[in-house]
Every structure is written in C-alpha cells, then in structure tokens.
Image (cartoon, rainbow, N blue to C red; front, top):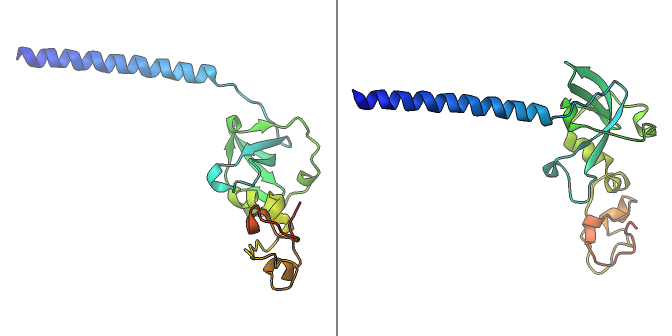
Length: 169
C-alpha cells in the first residue's frame, strides 16, 4: 500500500514537471519566432528542398504572393504556374528587388515545387528535351549526337569535365 502511494506521488510530480517544461518550451518557441508581414503582390523566394533539385539547379524559387490565408499561409505563383502547396510566412524570404519581369504575368496552372525548380533552371531552358548524350570521342559535332540532332547545346550533365565542342559555356 505504501509503495503505491509513493509511486502515485512520483507520477504526479513527473506529470507536473512535464507540463511546466511544455509550457516553457511553448513560450520560448513563440518568443523567438519573428512575425513576417507580407501582402499580396510581394515578391519572395522559397528554398527548394535538396531532394527536389539537382546539384546544378538554383537553390531558391522566385515567387509572388497571390493570396494569403488566415494571416500566415501564403499561396505563391512562380514563372511556371501556381505552386500547389501553401507556405507559412516564416518559410518565405522577402526580396529586396520587387521588380521581377518574369513574375509580372504568371500562368494559372498548378505546378509542384520540383517541377517549378526544374523549369526555372537555365540548363533545362536551353536543353528543352532534357537529353543527355554521353557521346565518346568528341562526336558532338555530327548528327550522331542526340543533342546536336535536337539543335541544342550539350549540358553539364552530358560529359562532365570532358572537352566538348557543342557544350554550354
């Protein structure tokens, strides 16, 4: 009987300490969080997750805020379309330059962040078919090369550090 009372009091004290710890953590998390105030039409950038981009892709996606829900969740549009996921204001970074011509008119089609990151990449814009030729012995000047056949330049993914006469600068 005596052991059960001691166990009960220890559990009560542990529960009380856990509640105190939880409250302190909530206060600390909300105190350190800066509120960012954005408005519709602001140009922002979001970080593209590493898993959704290639090593040569840009790390950030330039977007424009087109709608704000509940004061914190922002719907974004990029040059390729409307991003299909809403972002918290804490995940956005304000751009100093608000005059970005590519964000003046954005398509109304829904697009994923991965697809938007792929489309904004300069290498993918020059090589629309995303062909990778892997030609050996510098054959990229003839129609044997898939890149040359498509009238595109070889990308950094085709040859790596090897010499190519049809390569992007």
